[in-house]
Image (cartoon, rainbow, N blue to C red; front, side):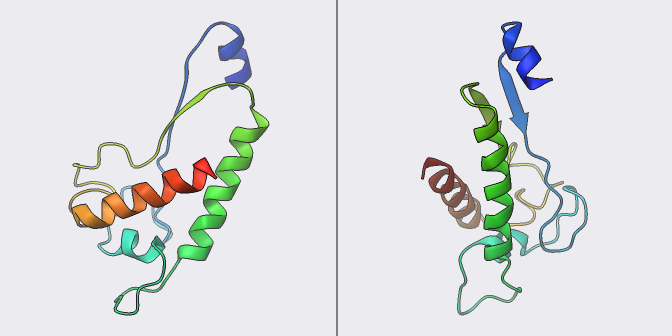
Length: 111
């Protein structure tokens, strides 16, 4: 349906509502520490590190987008970060953690 919409002149937007990578719950499982768990390992972290697993998830998303080339995709991960309902929202991570996961994700997709 992405190819069809593009062929009709559509602008393709993909909004990510990924399940919580720490708990396996839905995107609305706003367990504090999830963002910290997917960032590169920290020696003082109080949560299990899921960075390697999360990077594999980003690799799958990248492969999906590559398969759609040359269609431009407006990708919206971690949207509405000031919400309180998601694992990337303001109730579940600090502003610094959010910026770090955003930068990590953008850097990954730019490589």
